[in-house]
Image 1 (cartoon, one colour):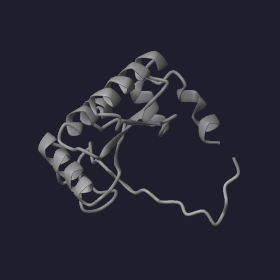
Image 2 (cartoon, one colour; image 1 turned 45 degrees about the horizontal axis):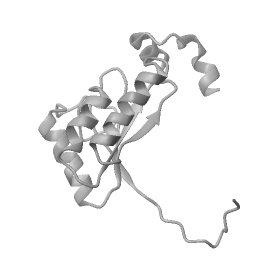
Image 3 (spheres, helix red, strand yellow; image 1 turned 90 degrees about the vertical axis):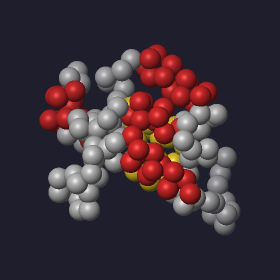
Image 4 (cartoon, one colour; image 1 turned 60 degrees about the horizontal axis):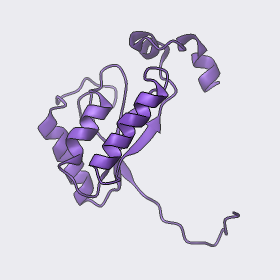
Length: 139
C-alpha cells in the first residue's frame, strides 16, 4: 500500500515510567525511589493527560518491566503499557506467553518494545550471551 502524503495521520504521544527512580535533572542521581504508588501516579497522570502509552524500560537498575506493566494496568483504563524486553535474555516462547497474558488481562492494551541491547556494561551485568556483538547491533 502506498501512503498518500496529503493523507491525515495522527501522532500519538507517550511517557516514560521511571522504574529506576526519578529526579529533576538528567545524569544526576535519582531523588525519588520507584515505589508502586509513585509509578501508578505517573501512569494515571499520563492517562489523564491523554497520552496513549507509557514506556516501561528494561535494564540494570530498572524494576522488572513485566511486573510493573502488570501492576499499573489494573489502575488505568485506556493507557497502554509498552513493555521493553530483551530477546537475548528470555526465550521467544516465554516472551510471547508473557506478552499474550498481559495483553489479555489488560483488555488488549499491551505493547512490546524489543530492545536488542544497551551499553556493553549493562549487557555483561545481565549475562547477555551476545554481549560481544554490541557493535554489530548498533553499527
